[in-house]
Amino acid sequence: MLLGLDTTLKQGIFMFYVGLWVSCHLLVYRSKQADAPSYNATSVVLLTELAKLIMAVGLYFANDGGPTVLWRSAVASLPLLAKYSIPALLYCVYNNLVYMNLAYFDPGTYNVLMQLRIIITGILYQALFSKQLNRNQWVAIVLIAAGCMCKEAAKLSSVGGMNANVGAWLSLLGQMICSVLAGVYNEVLLKSDGAKPSGVKVTTNLQNAFMYLNSILWNGAFLAAKGTLDEALSPSNWNAICTPIVLSVIGIMSSVGLVTGFFLKHLDSVLKAIASALEVVATCLLSFAFFGVPLDFFTVVAAAMVGAGVALYSRPVAPPRAEYELLPASTRC
Image (tube, rainbow, N blue to C red; front, top):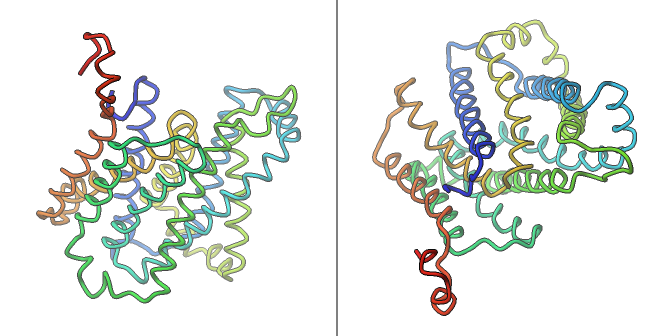
C-alpha cells in the first residue's frame, strides 16, 4: 500500500491534509497580490488559533462529552496542558519567523530551502521514537528533498538566493528546527495520550484544545511584545481581514490545525514531512493553472523526483538472501 496508508481513514487524512494546505497556499498567494488589501499577519494567526480552539471544543462536545466532562478532564490534566506550552511556543516562533525570513529570501527560494526539514525530521524521528527508517525510506527522503530544491534550482544560484547574510541563514535554520521539534513533540504527546490521569480519558480533541489555548496565549503575548496591538485592532486591519479570501485562509488553516492532530495521531511526522513536499509540487502545478506562474523544466523534474521518492518510501526492503530463501514461495517478490 502506497506510503503504508493501509486504511481508508489513513488515506482520507493524508489526502485531506495535502488538499487543505495546497488550497491555503493558493489563497495566501492571492491575498498578497498588489490589488489585495494589506493586513496584520500575526492577528490573522491569532484569529486562526481562536477558530481552532472553538472547533476543537465543539468536536469534544459532539464526540467526547459535555461541558462538565470537559472541565473535569481539563482540571485533571493540568500537567498535560502545561506540556503543550512547549510546542505552542515553538509554533509561535515558527509562524513569526516566516515573515522575517521572507524579507531575506524570495518566496521560491524560501519554500525550497524549508523542505530540507524533512531530513531533520527523519533524524529526530529515529532518535525520539527508537524506530529505524529503512534504506529505501532514507533514499526517498533525500530524493524528495532534492526534488523540492530542483524546483527552484535557478533561483538558488542567483544573488538573492545564495548570498544572504549569516544571520538570515541562522534564522531560516532556527525556523526549520522549530517546525520539526514542534511536530515531533506534538506527536509524542498525542501518541502517549498525555498524562492519562486516573479515571479520565484524554481524547485527541482535548489535546488539540490544550494546544490551541497555549497558542492563543503565546501569539497574544508576541503581538503585544512587538507593539503592534493597536495596528491589529485598527478598523483598516479588520476591514482587510473581513474579505472572502482572508476569511477563507482562516477557515482552511483552522481545519488544517485539527487535521494535523489526527494526522500525527494515526500517521507520523515523517509522512507529514512527505505530505509537505507533495504540497510544493501540487501548489506549483495549480499556480500555473490558476495564476499563470511559469511551469519550467526544473518544476517538471522536481515533480518526477518527488513522485519517485513517494513511491520508493512505501517500497519494502528485500530481506537478506538467507532469510529470503526460507520464506514460502507464495510470499516472495
